[in-house]
Length: 120
Image (tube, rainbow, N blue to C red):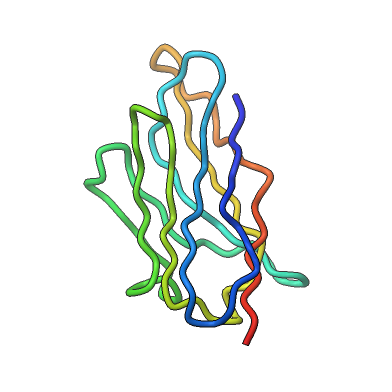
C-alpha cells in the first residue's frame, strides 16, 4: 500500500492550496484518514481527520475555519483545502490512513509528505 501526497508549494500569506493524498495498492478498505504536519524542529502536529462516511470530522484549533478535509472513497483520495494560509502553516504535511483487509485492521499507513511553505 502506498500513500502519495501532492499539492504542496511555496505561496504567499493569504493564498490557498489544496493537498491530495492518493492511497493505492492491494485490496483494502480505508477507514479513518487524516493529515498531520511537521515543521522544522517541532513535533508532528495533528491537523484534521475524518471517518470514511464523513460522520465524524475533527480539526486542530489552528485549522478550524481555514482548512477543510474531504475525501473521495471511489478514488481512494483524501484532500485538504487550505485557505488564508499563514507563515506558521509552513510545514511538511503528511497524510495517514487506517486500513483494513478482509475486515482485519492492518494498521495506520503514512505518506512521505508534501512541503508547504508560506511566505509573509
